Length: 146
Image (cartoon, rainbow, N blue to C red; front, side, top):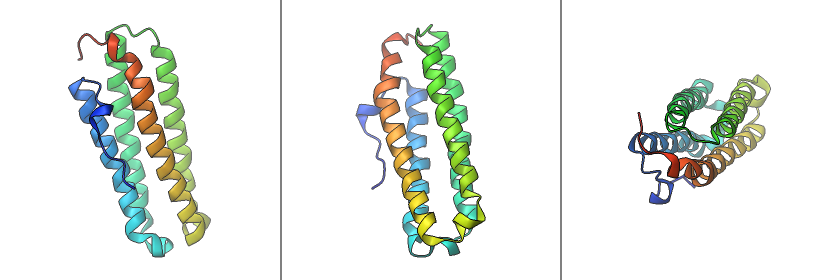
């Protein structure tokens, strides 16, 4: 099931909400690649999967920097803990991307299917939980964005 944007994810900070929507889109793109090719994943070009995960990684890094600047600019008191969560996510994405480059994984449909299911579930869970909990924590502190 695709991750769908809903008003419950809105921080009411237009730039951040727009970026969150794009993150949902990028996760859905990874899921689309999986769904459209799950019958023969090992035959699917590795580049498409790596590009989808890389696009998510790149966009996430950019989003985190902007979000952290907004929190810093508004003197959010739990900024360091929020940054730590962003760093944990970034580290996990890098680890998963490196695993995706493993030729043994890519040549085994079953292992690749399990990996992609786990990746998609991790992304969906992290994004929705992070927005609904951690991002909503800073919402009352934001008086103006950049």
